[in-house]
Length: 493
Image 1 (cartoon, one colour):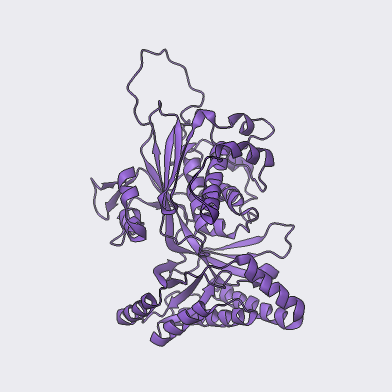
Image 2 (cartoon, helix red, strand yellow):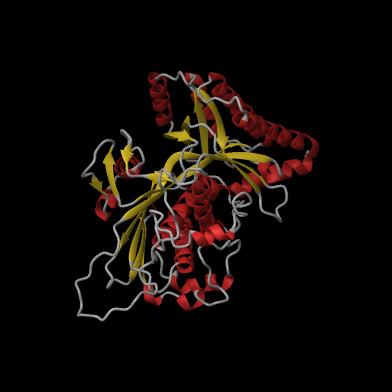
């Protein structure tokens, strides 16, 4: 997963060690400083301005299921994103709070009561540039008493989601921070549907990773003049710790979701040997394309769908391998087109070819038995108005479809499709494929393009009261549902 970036020299890591968001040297509050005599207690004041991080979800564009059997897949970022607001408390407030109202999670910990002795032990203490590929079972065990009273009224799957989110946050907080860490509130909102195979957990993991690394001042930039190599290093650093959070949530994640969410655009992903790290090739020239994403609202199990293909391969090995090989050829064709020296996003042939490849990919997935009547019904509705090319994305058996929209799609046709989808209780999202990865808004103030002063300061109340996905996007989104706004910055390679 980290093969391309993981070989960067350690000297650059140490050179960047004390960089803050503007790329200047600095020490984190609580680290060693020259002591001064205390002249009496002062009124407590916030240590730092509120700031935000944001990261996108992802879709598998080509290669579902074939990737499980050693073939390649292409995954790309989408413009549906998660957003994290970090509010630093006054020095006298020694608590950290995790708020995730979209799933009903809210919990507060006493900073000084956390198991710092376990996480800071010399044999276990990690530093920000470490590559962590497994969770330490003793550290996981040390966290458990601090998660036992989490969401006492939640049950079943709801409880599992709360536990996973809190475990990921706490493991990163204890690994990267120390006992002098300032009290803070971490408030998450997301425009991504959870459990729809769109990388919502990875998006959240990237938000948490980048925020904590910013708080300990170990990230440089992002800024317009940042060298590509330096930007790439920051993305990799964020990605490494996001992967740790993903391990807390999923146990044995592939790493593709957090890699796409960190760097944006798209990646070619291949894992022939599960005893080794996968091969991940960033596709920096992946085009930004208009995409219609539709959630079936049909529950599905990734494990069940993967098992279907395994059983089919055991009973019909030659035929199944031929189908998987065809899917691999589809992925390779798309990769060759995108990386061709003559590739042009403006060429109508590009969109049409990518769309036709999506159709072929979906047909092969149907042959593997991983589609669902709800998925096929979406395809029927899209085809009835002729707006694009549609395939399932992810494991199938439910979940979501993606439709690559034709360049000449009329608003009237999209309106007709929306009415048909609404009538059958599908959830539609208009998004963009292949956009930016992790972003930062520091301080948490947004201005409209051309606005030099003023702007909207994002505080806890505004953020919590934003209604639904549309409200969150309107308040803090990169585009905000209107003209581009100044403030959000991204590491771009």
